[in-house]
Image (cartoon, rainbow, N blue to C red):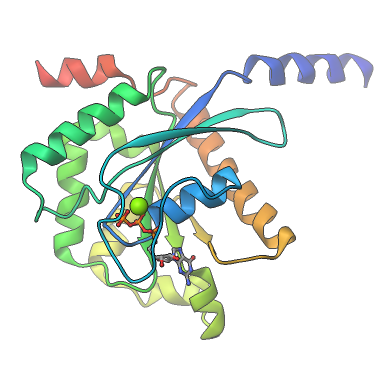
Length: 224
Ligand SMILES: Nc1nc2c(ncn2[C@@H]2O[C@H](COP(=O)(O)OP(=O)(O)OP(=O)(O)O)[C@@H](O)[C@H]2O)c(=O)[nH]1
Ligand SMILES: [Mg+2]
């Protein structure tokens, strides 16, 4: 047991380099709230009943209970093409610049309270197109509004089987990696559990990609 303990300590030390996750999704679906839940503090501005609150990419750092340093990048609603595409493009580039050591996970935030339409699907696909197909290997879907499902006695599985094709297709693109979040929860156990589940999905993605984050190089190669 002693030997393996030393090994696992080494292993943990090796993975203690900072990781970076990026929150993407439509305005008002809960990106900033999800960021705050992950960080365990309210740093990203979030407002009820309004969309377009976040206007620029921002990074915040936290240290997880296991010692892992995690950088969380919040973004404006990149999918609302009411904003001109040049602005959206600039924000994406800025986001890549903020993730100096690359992106380990892309969290696609979708509220269970809003409908996932063909337009939404198209927006996710244009995001994928912009970053290259490889980006979907880094994606995890985070459904927000877990409290809403609970209030209506609906399980996530129920919710998902009822869903329309666009959502099914996006989930398939992410190899069905998804978690449910309740950003309103005050229950410490629930909060710890949902965070743990999310971090497990991110670790899975990191492993799947051989520990290699999505980097500026991949992005630049695509752009030339
Ligand atoms: N009930 C409930 N409300 C949530 C949840 N997550 C976010 N919200 C609410 O949804 C609203 C929008 O959340 P934000 O985090 O500001 O959304 P955003 O995606 O950052 O929005 P923009 O910055 O405008 O793009 C706020 O009123 C949040 O309190 C959740 O899990 N449950
Ligand atoms: Mg926001």
